[in-house]
Image (cartoon, rainbow, N blue to C red; front, top):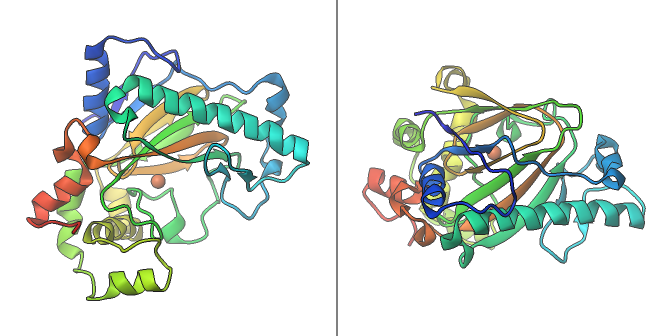
Length: 293
Ligand SMILES: [Fe+2]
């Protein structure tokens, strides 16, 4: 399967025929990266000074906005400077959410809007451990935020002002990955989900689905032979482009690049056009049991 589906979108509020929207939805839900090389997020002339890693506070991984009314986190600067960059991040947030709601009206009512992040720091040299090393192929899964199968939909924009692409590796389809790794994943220890929650390590009880997804994430990253030998393609995501994918389904690795905006959205499995293609339903089919109870 070619994991990249290139679109001709040029507008954040695109006007496209229903059949084109359906084709994009089918590609997205079957594990493609929707690549939009003609769609760009623009920093205004007054905002362009923020295309500099010196605005990062150096402690947080990214500069981020939790929700519409929240303050910007992770940035150094005066009140005015923070407000100006926050305006740019908020504009990206509005455009990214509008894009998804316009392209996929069926998601609109069920979309849970999460963090927006601005990443001015180069990809190279950011990781502090193999588990946090996003230059290793992985599917997204969050240790402290169990999601019980809810999807992780992400919109990315490369805003590099020097024409530098963001380079990703994209690995094998989710089902092939799951078939390869599932036999090595042990069942969770009895009581471990309750204990992690009681100790506030997780924000809610970790379902068996979350346990498997975290194991997929970790076992992929820990296996250097898998990293080298797994079926994969390298993709150059141009400066001034946008791409969209379900990052809990698409095996991905960020190899290089600098200056990116990213919007995270969550979609319930039941709101998908084809829930059977989701990681939850795929894993339930392969294990022949319910993984969220
Ligand atoms: Fe990731």
